[in-house]
Length: 237
Image 1: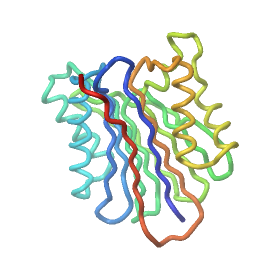
Image 2 (image 1 turned 30 degrees about the horizontal axis):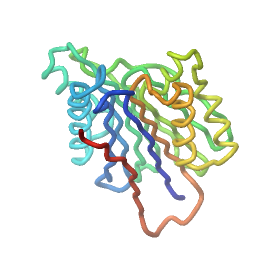
Image 3 (image 1 turned 120 degrees about the vertical axis):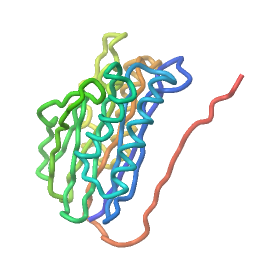
Image 4 (image 1 turned 180 degrees about the vertical axis):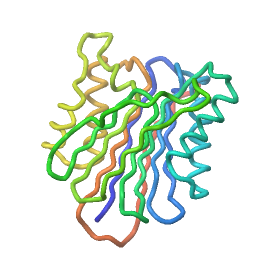
């Protein structure tokens, strides 16, 4: 099997710095974890919140801590720092080579869509509270066996809010199905969702938007690993 990961993200219109943070880390016993957090509100304050969450989760995962425990540790840090006054959503997608599983950990509102190898597409049921508001919280953890054709799409709430200003809201599940039928690659789905969200907002995103797609494909199990990043550098005036 072969793992493909793609990310597409953009900040809220007219905001210099968005509140979403996304990082990828190799797991100590093989595999990788993708960590996506959205800090409350937007701008530099929200960015500090999401950075705090992601850095804690990455630190814990790097030490071999399980995903659910890493999420709870991030909640403890955020609650201790802000006294339950601010929140963040968190999604962790992990390829666990020990058990040959895909582990999905969720804290907060945005759903995670899964396309199963048999072609069935679903939004994972249930919703865990966001990080930061409660002293004790329990994330939702879903474990799926690694199989060719398995695809997972996670995103922040900017994708859910796309089109709210124009009245052209995005049907995310239908959009994923259409994009898969046209070009079933991780990058095409991430880029296609962001393009549709931008079109719904007339090119002016109403919120920070981050989309991460992880796809398990049939293919060579060994060989080089590649990571490519494309990022614009805005003018400073």
